[in-house]
Image (cartoon, rainbow, N blue to C red; front, side):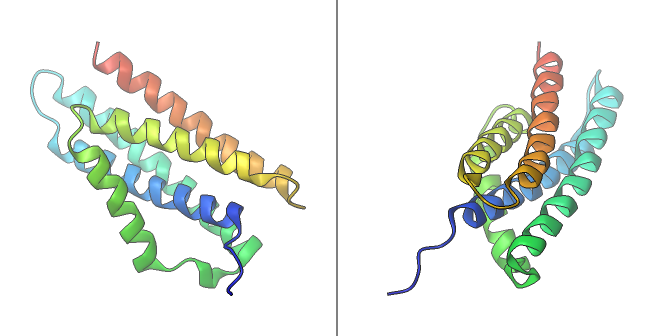
Amino acid sequence: MPAAPDALLVNLLELWATLRAAHHTYWTLHWRSQGASYYGDHLLYQRLYQARVKEIDRLAETIAALYGSDRLAALTAWEAAQRVLVAVSTSPNPGLRVAELTLHAAHRTNAAIGAHPYGVAVNNVVAGIADLALESVYLLQQRSR
């Protein structure tokens, strides 16, 4: 019987996929901005998608350091990101929804850290992602009021 997958690895990969979906969602919303608030929305979504690039990279490097770079399979990650994209595609506010999903994924990842020997460092990475996701929730909520 194969060993059960490491819970922290599973959650880190899910968070990585969610960040990739968030990046793609914000980038697409950036291109699709229109109307009276076009320019402000265009800049907001640019700010959000650009911030995700650093997060995606930092989290991928964390996964590689803890579990090996072979865990970073592009196709597997994109398939997981697509599941998130499908989940947010029917939302009236996909940007806000993907920010909320990022917060939930960060919470689950943080809960899976447990007594991992590098838990403090992983927590710092995940906390930074959660902080930025919460900022995104705030900005997108203000935008929709």
